[in-house]
Image 1 (cartoon, rainbow, N blue to C red):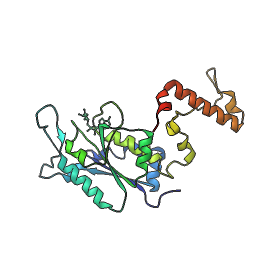
Image 2 (tube, rainbow, N blue to C red; image 1 turned 30 degrees about the horizontal axis):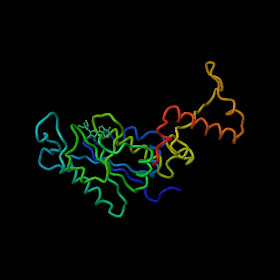
Image 3 (cartoon, rainbow, N blue to C red; image 1 turned 90 degrees about the horizontal axis):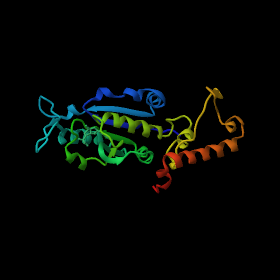
Image 4 (cartoon, helix red, strand yellow; image 1 turned 90 degrees about the vertical axis):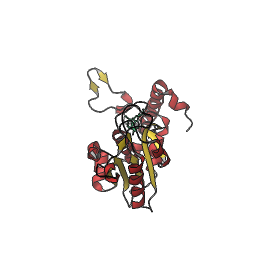
Amino acid sequence: MTRAVPYEFVVVTIFPGMFPGPLESGVVGRAFARGELALRAVDLRGFASGSYRQVDDAPFGGGAGMVLMAEPIYRAVEAARAERPEARTRVVLLDPAGRPFTQQVARELAGWDRLVLVCGRYEGVDDRVRALVDEEVSIGDYVVSGGELPAMVVIDAVARLVPGVVGEPESVVRESFEERLLDHPQYTRPAEFRGMTVPEVLLSGHHADIESWRRRMALERTRERRPDLLHETT
Ligand code: SAM
């Protein structure tokens, strides 16, 4: 089942030219082309005041770098919300201090109609922006230079979960982290490569045996590499 209205991503950024970038390729790119998804990058400078269109300023208290000002971000997000008041819109700030981004978070975000993603830059955003957004998301315990790459990661992961985007829904349901398991090993031709062979069962044509082997391998791999996933309760 596909959606009547496309799932929409709105990105608030000082570098709108970075979009769609890699999101134009592959399965997600095709869904944008088919109109199942929509993406708009909004230039934060368009919401700045004064002839210099200033969006950043020095931090109070001193210190290195610049901070994105609250005012233009508030204006940009309020404008995005007002564009489609009937839609269920979720506003997310990309921030290293946010909730760790997981498949579960992607699933939750795919349940909305629109996602407004606010990208920080420099030393980050004025802390009062946290009062504006619905939630904050981090893509991992490391720092990248801006929120644009994290926003792309979020968009790609969420887009895959929007009904109709990935051709075979089963391939999404069976992926790593769905059911709190890593994926089972996958092989393709040839059956023997540099002395390494494909497990016999996969060549057998016995679907039930293949299914139980895959389940067993997924469990084994998860136990070995990510035992924490098996003990998580949410
Ligand atoms: N001074 C900030 C700190 O130490 O938390 C880092 C600022 S970072 C250079 C600039 C922007 O990149 C952030 O405001 C955020 O939007 C984005 N960013 C960097 N790392 C991120 C991460 N792991 N997850 C999400 N966004 C991130």
